[in-house]
Image (cartoon, rainbow, N blue to C red; front, side, top):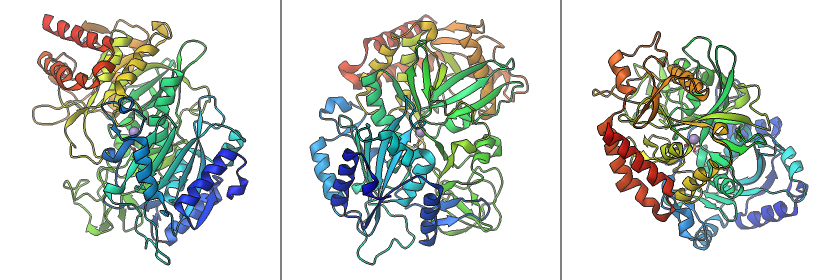
Length: 608
Ligand code: SAT
Ligand code: MN
């Protein structure tokens, strides 16, 4: 399709304006067809950018530049008119200044490239909860990934008609080509200091420049479905959250839907696709990264997964840790920064079997296969944040209702992160405000999902939204408090804080995690029915002795006791850190309800 096929005057004018600024060789409007995907992929294979995988039908491997392997939080901006509206946790720049800088970069940035126009829907096309966007990009890699991760094509233009609302998302890899120049099969992107992932929340607009990678470039995902959508949600009274959505069925066939907020690379995909180790229980997947939730007429919160695929962390994914993910990526999958085997398959650390012969690592260098299913830090075959992009419908445990436009009613919210100490395996909040407090204090060890010098250190990541909230995080806490008043307590989801990542004095994990997390899910399920399976403690409700099924579990009684009791000293330190370093950041934007919860927690602990 061409610009003239666009019947929406505002979209057409915007596309023309961008084309004038970026000066591409061609403009192409995507129809989202398989033929289009195949053609673009063939071109990328021919140019040497993509390697087809003999072992996986219709699947390819890409290798990025070493500087372009993860989200760049230091180059991510919330350009609201007032700095206060971006708040203390976001990078703010004056929108006019940022636009001037970026227009300078965008000028002529698509020389030698095609400019693709991608009409996409976040959520089932036409659903009342869904929203539309148009991404303009000069990257065919982005087009193909968007094709998997969102619903792309003519149907979206039809829904938009001549005046439907859309979020304009502008992206360029930031590498114009001189006449006759080509990428030579190299991943195009700009230097770190020229990368910009910019959001203009008042205009509901996204401008991204200089990176081709995941959350920096697939603008429907973190930029739209979280940063811009969180602003829409605040204004319209709903929630746009960094949460997986799972369907939990008990042995008696009862169903509950649960969402979970965990920072990037903390196992959301694994939890969403978990295979229970306790008999009779079943987990099915609705989504693995983002939940949009609105109140239904019955006063309950209903969630949809706005995405259409999985952009999952590859290393560590195996038939043991996540068989359903392994099944989902057998075909029609894009791999990025994984290793390549001699026989034309991908390989990564933690895939569950050693590689044979010679491998090509994510830099494109030949290397002997590591003796074990592991490599020393910095010498990995696959980058620790290597990813797979796979269609959600390929997942064997996708729930039949995953595309229900109404969404699914949520019974429980889980919060969690990687916490080697203090935080127990599971505890439940006494009520909504206490639960919002728990969300506000979430912390996690920083992982490879973000380029940062803090990898391995614990940082506060409230609601796992630290890098994804499009406005003042203090106001976001207030929004959560306010939502709790919109319906009766029995209709609100119950709130839990879980921690699969406790370590002992020798640094070994104390809880096996993965499928055994079903034991905790089963306790949570019963809590939602108000079963008598808990004790009240200083920090909230915790499992009564024996309430967590440990049959067949390989955890000593001492370890089990340690992870299911209150660590008074640890919590007092936690409180000190929240009081001195975390909450003061929000100043007058911190809801008084949260300081009250902090005081209450401290008083409870001191009584212990
Ligand atoms: O690269 S993404 O931002 O899409 C993945 C993540 O960090 O969760
Ligand atoms: Mn994520």
